[in-house]
Length: 254
Ligand SMILES: C[S@@+](CC[C@H](N)C(=O)[O-])C[C@H]1O[C@@H](n2cnc3c(N)ncnc32)[C@H](O)[C@@H]1O
Image 1 (tube, rainbow, N blue to C red):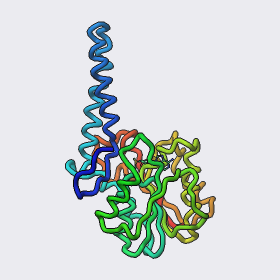
Image 2 (image 1 turned 90 degrees about the vertical axis):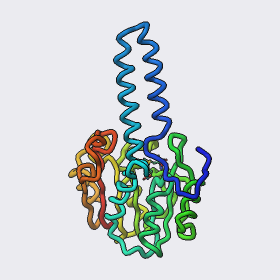
Image 3 (image 1 turned 180 degrees about the horizontal axis):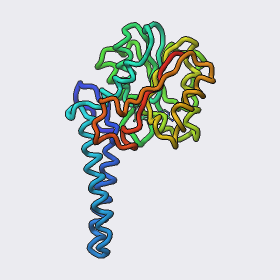
Image 4 (image 1 turned 180 degrees about the vertical axis):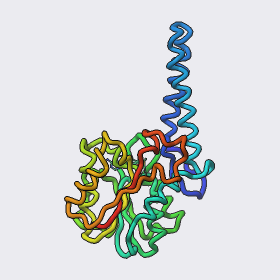
């Protein structure tokens, strides 16, 4: 975690510097080997291209590059069919960007952010709390360390739940659909939900229409799917499936 020097919130970046270091180091290593084994140059070039691509994505995600991360989160915010009365949960809150957006959009709501805060990411609970203070919502938000696979809350505890680009990252559950069911468990009957993830990756969630049918079968009042990958917010260059090319939002009322 870098030293925090300014009074600006730090919402981190979905492309961590570790990915860039790893790809850069791999490219240099393969380039060295290619002097002995010339064919290895192909791997070196591929690593360099990947390095450039992830650099570009990191730039576009950052405030300097247009703050695409904020725009993608806004898509979730606008799908919550909620009057803002009561309690909301942000599952996998990272550095609390969406948690704080929810608190600001609904000025009397109390919002909880949970995250596993594993070493892979540039996120932490301390930064969440600092961001909430800077943004003036610290009195209405709180943060807990927990896994999306086993939320430490009674069924029906929240009036609304959101999540952004988290479920595909959760490694302690094999079946991704279980994470949706767990998220919905903690929402009260009639409460609102909006979850964005790589729902168009068949390997993770199966067919979307089938997924919707399964969710309806859990007794959910209404659930819809919005393909956000192709909604105009995501630049074409970032529509590769492992980047933002397979994202969508499941939203509705429990
Ligand atoms: C792409 S980041 C998204 C963060 C945040 N939602 C945002 O919009 O900036 C993925 C997040 O998932 C979190 N995560 C990974 N596995 C998790 C788990 N088992 N439970 C809760 N959060 C998890 C990571 O710590 C990270 O904060």
